[in-house]
Length: 176
Length: 331
Image 1 (cartoon, chains in turn purple, red):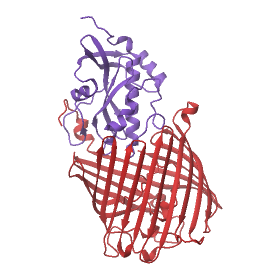
Image 2 (cartoon, each protein chain N blue to C red; image 1 turned 180 degrees about the vertical axis):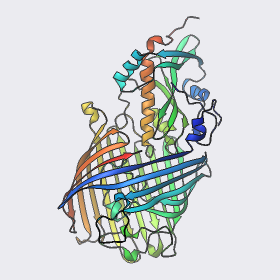
Image 3 (tube, rainbow over the protein chains, first blue to last red; image 1 turned 60 degrees about the vertical axis):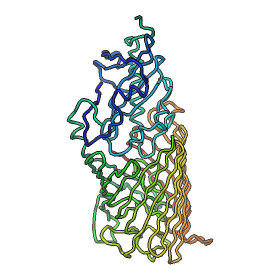
Image 4 (cartoon, helix red, strand yellow; image 1 turned 120 degrees about the horizontal axis):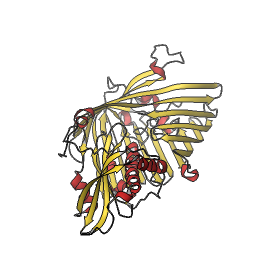
């Protein structure tokens, strides 16, 4: 998974660092970073259920804990917009529902309104049992239609990936 | 804001971009049965820094075949539709200067072929709000967030439409669109729109234009969308000091039936009603109505296949019913 953490540049809008995104979704939880291998079998599982292709190889997974209790997991993905990718943080609960979404970096000239709560709150609580589809259960932002689709795909991608590799994720109640 | 790690991509590649949209139409109306290479629009833009942006659109209509022969049916057009610079003066105000889209109604702003559900634009957006309507000037826009609600505002001072003396029953305000070289009537115009969106599903806007000789267009627009259904409409009235008075409105709906059948993409059932009266009297002169039913298919958000049947009731020779079909892509 490409993580688009970049230096300040004239040509993009940086809305949140990784730390800020994590704090927005998981508060003051402790975070552990791990690299988990996504196999062709994992990728095929995601492709067949969500019609989303993901690259195989190592992916950075963030696990959030309070003492020994797992609060959730997260990934940062670069999802292609109309011309350029946008960097999105997606956090999920241990029950594999969306806990929070943060737009970290936006590289188009217009359409940044997908960063607002009025759009992002639509994803809260969503699972893979939900359509996660614009003009179905997701309303797009006027003037940011393509970005709305891209954000939706980013959420679906992270949900699908973490669900597909759930056997490899740290489980609830880690022993001290 | 400094964010860790660096890529060449973010330093250089995102500074300038090229994009646009294109549509190809098929029209069947009366004895006319033809494909049309209607629009090819190239957009170029650049982000100078986080507060300064440039954007432009150049349009080639019907292959851009430019000729002085007014009698030919092959005549196309090449024109600059937009060319402006944005400067973020503050969080609440961006100053825009150049050839700008006039913020009257919503369709004039969001007119791209791949964004619209139907092929043909509504009658009110042809004869009352002369879409695509752009002018040269300066102004600004911004958004005020009130919780999850949004208040948007946009306004400009421009050269203005040409004199209302050339408004006609046949073409309404359509031929009044200005050139980009000189102010024909040496009098400036103001235009603006205020929009309120209490949530993501609803928006209402009020807009107005005021030019020389009491020339005025006022408009209201609105949109609601819930799940698979979207409804939107616009209404506008034109008046001027030459006693011209035109009125029109449109209401359209789109219903995405793809979830019902669990099929890929979006399949929208469409319906639209349009009314325009370029004379706005009790007489039938200048009055046209049109009801359209159709559907479109979006296999991808940037690609749409459209077809619709238009039931025409017009007070002109162009009153035949018509089929409009098209393919449009944004890139």
